Image (tube, rainbow, N blue to C red; front, side, top):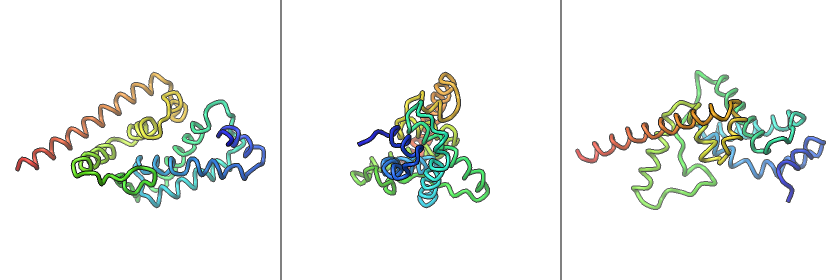
Length: 187
């Protein structure tokens, strides 16, 4: 099994069939990235396709200096931004529902866990997009801070301070939801 970098270098050199294994490795991750950043399932599928169309179109720009995933998420991020700009008025964002993500486990274990997950998803979808995106890249896509800094085109110290702010916003949103839920239970 070839590594991602070698496969992309092969694509760059004209072996377009090497794009298929990369698509298979990353389609679910990219789908989940788009879903967690707020796009509807149908739109997320389209954005995954568009991302790989751009990978093919811009294959000559791949340098191989950083991880393939860093380059790929940079393209995916741009695809999402372009889609958002084109559809700003009629953007179809929705809260992420883990039951629709094909690689994540279902949350049928018990009501409490499901409720907590729903509150987390609601809190995540309520914070500004730029902060939500950082959390998704870090926590759910498991990119390292250095990779996220390259994807978002900012220096590492700026990224770290933005991550702190993103976590604070998420915690505050979750606490507001949790407190509101407890007040309803007490009634």
